Amino acid sequence: LFAAVEMAPRDPILGLNEQFAADPRPNKVNLGVGVYYDDNGKLPLLQCVREAEQRLLAQPSARGYLPIDGMPAYDQAVKALVFGADSEVVRTGRVATVQALGGTGGLKIGADFLKKLLPSAQVLISDPSWENHRALFGNAGFAVHTYAYYDGARRGVDVEGMLASLRAAAPGTIVVLHACCHNPTGYDLTPAQWDAVVAVVRERGLVPFLDMAYQGFGHGIAEDGAVVGKFVDAGLDVFVATSFSKSFSLYGERVGALSVVCASRDEAERVLSQLKVVVRTNYSNPPTHGAAVVATVLNTPELRALWEQELGEMRTRIRAMRQRLVDGLKAAGVEQDMSFITQQLGMFSYSGLSKDQMVRLRQEFGVYGTDSGRMCVAALNSRNVDYVCQAIAAVL
Ligand code: LMR
Image (spheres, rainbow, N blue to C red):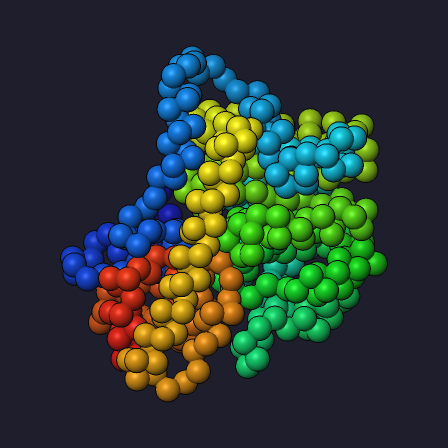
């Protein structure tokens, strides 16, 4: 039966974890996957999560099946966070939200639903994009193409190119957009540039699908979330995949969501019923723990304030590490201007290093980043940053 099965290639991001784990060098550094580590190199257990778990433990509950679309308190909290509790879309009930297995799960539910709704649509992802976008929409049966995004020469977003790509897209094309902290480049659109994108999406009748995996890691929770409001205000039907993996440091709980903004409550109810079919036929219904933790934090004012503070601390530490990286590279003898690293947002720096240089970093120094030149600066700390700078300087 399996004689002809070919070996699939290693995942370009998570596959690096396997290689890293097998590397015996004590000074190895994992800048591959997008995971935040504290200055001691430890994955943090946020205090707000710890306190929420203590509260949940104080009132232990049995683990029945959740509804197919997830825990109601969680779905409500997601809607309030993503759209605003008092927003018109939430008040009038025209958002369909389902709990999902992380942000990836939210994307996949949306992709499968869209394939039934728009079977011959094409999908556009940014050039470059998170590697899994192409694979995920491709496996859902779509032809996946790219829109212009990164301008390597100018080190920023090629906005004119992006708008031209979107203008050339056929109506009904699904456009996957990174709401903040673009993965892998770290370059985001300005609010005015977002307005221009929203206008083209609207004019051309495109279907916007926002991937919001890093809310709070750019400028702040509200600032990063403002992009969603622009699509809503333009009267667009928009998909939003939310992840709490990074913002709650709850990677292994797979806690995320998909929200779909519809024209009316009636439409939202029908859309929700279809999203539930996708969930039921894939994994039946979602798990309880991560959603219970996130709902407890988001729905308890003092825990919510603590979360915002802790998320702010992560954001600030990443910024400090960006600066340390720039300074350290200079001190290590790198002559080219690397200050662009401090202009990028979120967990990643798109370093501009070639695949060969990234392979050398891995093989010669045990410093792991993706072949695309992406490095997770959220995994740098005061003990490993100088070593990383020396390694980068050597391959440059
Ligand atoms: C990343 O890009 O490293 C993260 O989003 C983790 C993942 O699932 O790829």
